[in-house]
Image (cartoon, rainbow, N blue to C red):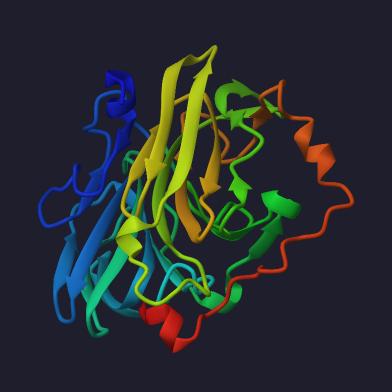
Length: 317
C-alpha cells in the first residue's frame, strides 16, 4: 500500500483509543467535518460519550444497548433493540443533540458492537442545535437501489428526509455477494449549488460469509474490494481488500466501486459532512463511467434483496 493510501485507509484496530476499537475525528491531519467511534462491549460494559459540541448517531451493529444521555439537566434512558448482525436489515438508532452527553451499555449476551457517527457542532450559534431523537426500526427508510449486479440495499436513517440533524448525513449499505456498489464512481468534493456538494466521507466496512456458505467458513476470511482515485480537488488512491472493521477516509476524489467478493456479503456505513451551508448529498459521476446507470434499465433487482433477519443458524455463524 502506498504512503498516501495508508493515510486514508486503516485496518481494524489501527485507530484504537481509550477503549474504542476505532476513533476518527478532527484530530486526524486533513480531516475536519466527520467522525466515527466503534465500540465492542460484553454485557454490562459501558463506553462514555463525553463532551458537548458534537452531534452523534448511535447505530447498533450487533446486539442490544441501553443509552443514558443527559441534556439541559435532564437524564433519559433509551433502549436500542439492535440486531443480531448488520446483514439482518435495518436497526433502530438514536440521534443525540450536540448539547447532550451520554454512555452506552451493552444489554445483550456475548460481545456486542455499535458505531457512533459524529460531526462537530460548536455551541456558538454557527450551526443549529437539533433535538435528540429515537428512531425505531419501523421508521427507517429502506431503499433498494440499482439493478442486476449493481443491486444494493440502503438504509437512509441519517439523510435529511428522515433525520433533522445539524450537519451530517449517515446511511448504511448492504451489497450481496458478487455485486458492486458505490458505482459508477462518483465524487462530492466541490461546492456547485444544485449540482454537487462538498462532503468528506467515511466508509466503515463489515463483511461476512453469504447465506448458504458451508458451515465452518470463517468470518475472518471474508473480504471485499474498495477503490478511490484522484479528482481535480486532490490526489488520492486506495485499491484495497477490505475486511470487517476496516475504515476508508475519502476527503476528495472519485470513490467506488465497493465490490462484494463471490461468497461474501458486504456492509458499509457512510458518514458525510462538509463546509457547505446546506446539508445535502449531490454527486457528480466520473464522466467516463456515468453511462453505466442507463445500462440498468430493463434489468431486474437482485432477488436476494431485501436483506431481513437471518435464521438463528446464519446469524450465529
